[in-house]
Length: 345
Image (cartoon, rainbow, N blue to C red; front, side):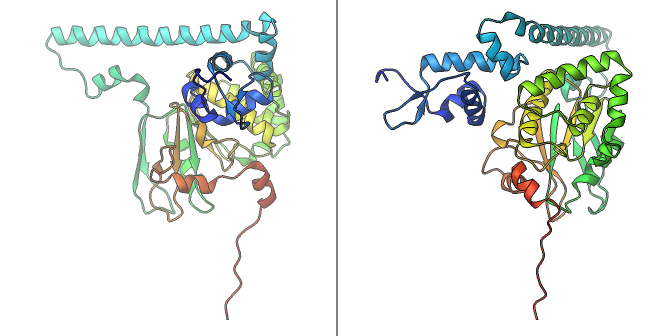
């Protein structure tokens, strides 16, 4: 290792690349990157390794699975075409959105010339169109009727809280109050996934979208199951503009949860419809990987009002969020277990 070249630690490299150290480890496990080693055996990233990792990160942001990236880097260009087509579609959608915003700006300017004042909130919507979706309502029991307000709804919002904190009631109220929203509860598999299969098979366009997503997820290590199928059918169906999903990890093993999490983050970056996810799994909510398109709502154990929590150690609420999460292995081992203290004589 050349002393004059600046080598970065995994955490430094991950920060520069805009990913988590966990993501770099995954890329290494799949043979996509090869970090160097210090004399003491620690991983280190020099210019060559950073260039290699940057290419992988760029391909991930285009929507390629890890298996597709491996094939593309082996000289199989057909792996890139679907991802580039999807990226082009997303860019065209953003162009249409900007064109519509530009038209509204021109309209407001024309009104100003005629001496007309912009309507309340119009300037804020022009400056930040993505922040126009918000909600305000009185909290249900177990809260005391406090008002809950949520503005600047992100594409991906996690709802976290310990047992009995009221997070499911909050989620249900959100789905009732937000315009064109639906609640997807744990009963989504009551029929063994039959409804999801029938819905998919009745619509060729939906089936094509679902099969494409499932193929991507399998490339990422997911195992196709009724639970996964029910989720993907709901996500890909034409329907409510917002989905609120209770216990999103239900019925999914760790590898599938990790693949699903990567897929949902890519959906968020592409501007897909907002999702609210109730979860207690670290495979779904990796606090080290939360990006600008994501938000966390904590329902505290003491039933104080729910609040947004920033994903940074040391900020208010972060430790409470972290203690609500566990790995899929721990969650499976403790499912159905409740705390019990014997009576003290």
